Every structure is written in C-alpha cells, then in structure tokens.
Amino acid sequence: MSDPEKKKGIDVTVRGLKKTFGKQEVLKGVDFEVKPGEIFVLMGPSGSGKSVLLRHIIGLEEPDAGEILIGGDSVESEGVMDKHHLAMVFQSGALLNSLTVGENVGLYLVEHRLKKPDEIKRIVTEQLDAVGLKDTESKMPSELSGGMKKRVAIARALVSEPELILYDEPTSELDPVSSVVVSQEIAKLNDRTGVTSIVVSHDRDLAFGIADRIAVIIDGHILAVGTPDEVRNNQEPAVRDFLHATIKRH
Amino acid sequence: MFQNIGELVILFWRTLTSLPLTWRQRQKVFDQLFEIGVASMLMVCVLSFFIGAVIALQTGPVLVERGLHSYVGGMVGYSIARELAPIMMGVLLAGRIGSAMTAEIGSMRVYQEVDALRTMNINPVHYLVLPRMVAMAIAVPMLVTLAILVGWVGGATVAATNHSIEISFQVFFHDLRNVVELGDVIHGVVKGFCFAILIGLVACHQGLVTRGGPRGIGRSVTKSVVNSIVLIIVFDYLITRLLQK
Image (cartoon, rainbow over all chains, first blue to last red; front, side, top):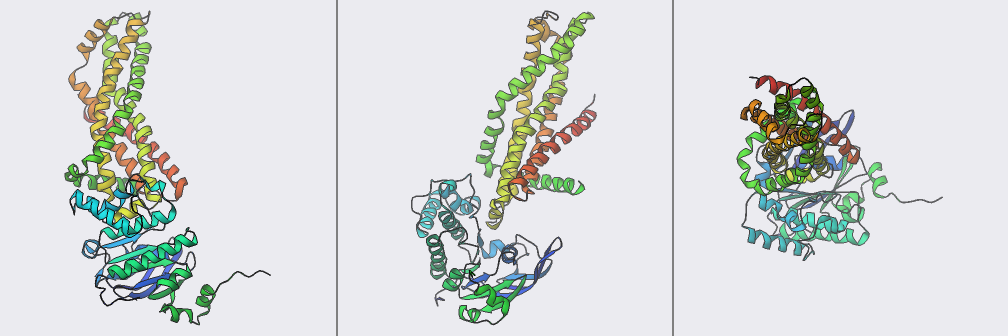
C-alpha cells in the first residue's frame, strides 16, 4: 500500500503511556511507533483503551506517565498542532449540528482565516467531491446518514492538509456497504496524499483490508504489532482469541 | 465547590483576554443578541409590567390610607429601578437563556463537537463562550432598562385604575421623578450587567464540563440555573453594598 511518492506523512512515537481514570487503569504502559505515511490500525476489544489512546495522541487527554512524539515534538508542547496539522475523525463524525455540511467542512479555514471566502467555497466543494458527496454543501448534518456524516468528517479533516489523521472507529454503526465505502476512502486518501493514518477499530475486515501495520491492544497493553500477516499468525493466546473469535451455536 | 469557583474565575479571565477577538466573532454575537434580546423582549415586557402592577397594588392602598399619596410613584419607581427589574430579569434570563446555553454547549461537549473544535485548533472559549458572553453583556442591560420603563408603566396603570389608589399617570410620574434619579436607573443597569456576566459564565462553564450523555446534560442545566440564581442573589447584596449612597 505504501507509495514512493508519499511525502506528507509524519512519524508518531508512543513511549510508556499510562493512564488511570479513578481506580481504573486504562493504559498500562503502551509503546509503539508509526512510520510516516503508513496506515496503522489499532485493534482491540471494547474497553481495551483504544479510543483513550487516540485521544492522547491528539492531545485531548494528558497522560499520567509516558510521552507521545509527533514528528519528534512532544504532543504536549506549545504549537505542535499548528506545526504538524493533526486531524481526527470521531466515531460519531462530531459534525457541528448548527452548521451546514459546507460550513462544517470549511470551518477550519474560516476560523483560522487562511483563505478568502471564494477559495474556501471551492476547497469545500473539492473535498466533498473527493469523498463522493457532491452537492451536499447546504444540507444540515441531521439530513445525512451515518456513513455520509463520517465522509463529511473525513472531508473536514482533509481541509487542514494534515500530516496525521486519527480515525476513531470509522466503520462502527455502519452497514456493510457503507463500511466498505468508508474503508476505501481512508485507503484512497492515504494513497493520494501520503498522510499518516492511525485507525482505531475492532473491525477485522477494515484492519486486514487497509492496514500497512496492525497493533492489537488488550487490557491496556499492546500484545502484538506487525504487518497484517504477522499479526494474523501471532501465537499469543489473547490475540488469537480476539482475532479468531466466532459465533458458536451448541 | 472551590474547584467550580476556580474554574469560573479561569474561564472569566480567558474570556476577558479573548475580547480583542470579538470583531472576528461578530456574526455569532449578532445571532446570540437576537436569541437573548429580541426573543426575550415580549416575556420581559409581560413580567415587568405585572411586577410594577403588583408593587403598586401592594403598597399603593397602604400609603394612600396613611395620606402618603405622593410616595406611591416614588416607592414603585425606586424599588423597580434599583432592585426588582434587575433581579427579576436575572432570574428570568438564568432560566430562559442560561439553561439554553448550557444545554447547547453541553450537548456539543457530550457529542464530541467541542473535542472536534479542539482538534481543529479552534479554542472553544473563542468560538463558543466569547460570543455568548459579549451578547449577554450587551443585551441584558438593555433588557433591564426596558423592564424598568415597562414596570413603571405597569405601576402607573394600576395606580390610575385601582379605586383604592386613584393616582393619575401624570401625578404618578411626577412623584416618581421627585424620588428616582438617573443614578438609580444606572444602579439597576449596572446590576443587570453584572448578572449577565454571571449567568453567561455559569451557563458556559456548566456546558463545557458536562459529562455522561443526555442525563448529564439535564444535570448540568439544573446546576446552571440553580447556581446562577444563587450567585445573582449573593451578588445583588454585594453590589448594593458597593453602590450604596
């Protein structure tokens, strides 16, 4: 999946990350590295700490211990967001319900006054076209399906020309067809822009379909990291149980 | 409680330091001004008319009975200007506007819209709190001025039409002018301004700290209204002491 022309992605290093909420230790010393331009999928069962880990990477949570480096700069350091342009696609899309789709997509440019209104309009149209949502600028988020909301959220993330995009459960609550569309969007985007992508999911189809590398996090620990084949053949019992769980009747 | 007070002080400071960005957020300020000001006007008029009316109805017959006709206008005008208009507007707006602000920001917090703003490097204080606080600070003193005027008219109407008072409009306002000075109206407006800041601050703070889904939003709205009203009453005393002649 890697392309020699990719140049926009950035590396991410997570070292000894620990986080406790109340009495619950959610992250128990997490270490991994993400290479520039790769799609790195964090898999794990519900409650394993995947989303919390993602929120740490974008600076929405402060760790109790450990550090996160984005392109060599600590995520807690001043101006790291401006310097590296990070973006996140939330599980629900997290579109601002009081704004239209077009206003949501252009929000970053408008608030930071980076372009003129005409140019913003053009960029918004382009980004919506790129995710297959032509002529939806004037719609309200409430008029969109779950899959469309996530694609708008991807378009919104793209507007800032990010070096790193984080996806939190991008295919959750979607029907199988919409899941495939969103997964393909992530892969296409990575191929087109070379952005580094960290995807949190428990969707095995998505992970093995688009990932360059996969990490399996269970109970606050990373138990396996590697290419899809390496992870698929991992012999760690908890990893095998998670990856090969099937419904058994009688 | 002390943590809440500390957070309110910090939020107030952050809002103050972001005031230079008000022009950039002017469209949102206008939207909020409409929501707070125009949409509240009818309710403010009805409420203040009847407050003026009931004060005249309660005090008028007692004063007239004791031969103190000339004090009715002054009594009604003074109490409305200095106390009743600002405090009733404060309570009304804490319930009507403060609760709506908390619910809106709270649901944005719960549904990760506030987090989305942060990931776009958009400061929620600049985007959400500043326009609301500025609009409150502009609209509420105007609403208090309107409430004072309508309250006086309410008092005068009852004084003129109630058979146990029977003081004409002209006499009522003549007596009112003898007692009430511009400073008394300013006193009420200053109180309104302070209450506006308190309501906006408490409402935005409660919205931003909302957790736990729809139930959490409900809890935050209740806390916002109750805390605003308690603070309004406490600050009413403090401001009265401070501005006492």
